[in-house]
Length: 300
Image (cartoon, rainbow, N blue to C red; front, side):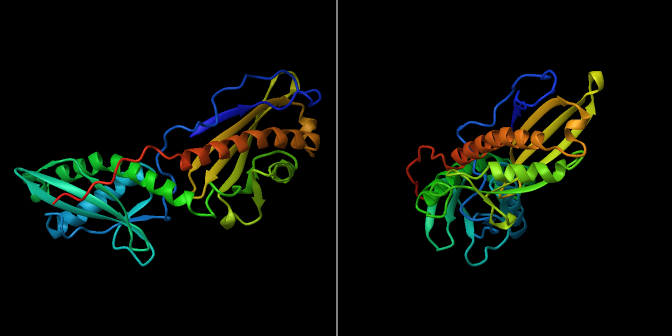
């Protein structure tokens, strides 16, 4: 998660000295792991053609699902229902080594990609050794997550409803911890500042691509002032915190209690800029298309 510190504008009257400068950044369009695959979850069914006994096959499916989840690919071990994405696991024997292989199948039954796994010692694999299976899942999950990133980008580019082809929808959620009327006035002002040609604010969280929440903290400051810290959190559709925007300022207690007034308006305007940057960079991260390796046939 990336953080961005924003300082309330100098136009606020009697606000005191800014406690610290900008730090960090809200993210960058770096090579990214898949945070939202083509379906809400990738199913990992128990393999039947992977040279494993029933118990070992079920264990490997669980290991692989857990490792993929660690790469931000939401995955569950179990049989796929109709309309779900799934990863098929097979294996072939080559000398004293087992060669795992994987195939990604979409909800339409179409194969979207193949990925060979790293060779595994046949003795440990065939015997269902837990450590061997766990190590194999760990070794292959990184490559599979990259394959899912490529597949995701390809699907998103052809989907008119994807974030590549429309403005993101943002829901402004709860603000908590503010003195006075801040818990009400801050989200109200933010909802007015965020909409634009590059962002749409929605009233239903279920319709949103991103949800923004905030927590407000106060602490005593010199000369009768109070230090106010506003932490805005940007959550993606999976509930993961994609970024954080923090504002810190010293204010007179009467500036925000009982009413925030112009302080809420100024804080929301400043926060909206940072939130928009977090959302924009998260979209770039999700839709970045890494160079796609040519599809490889399943070994064996």
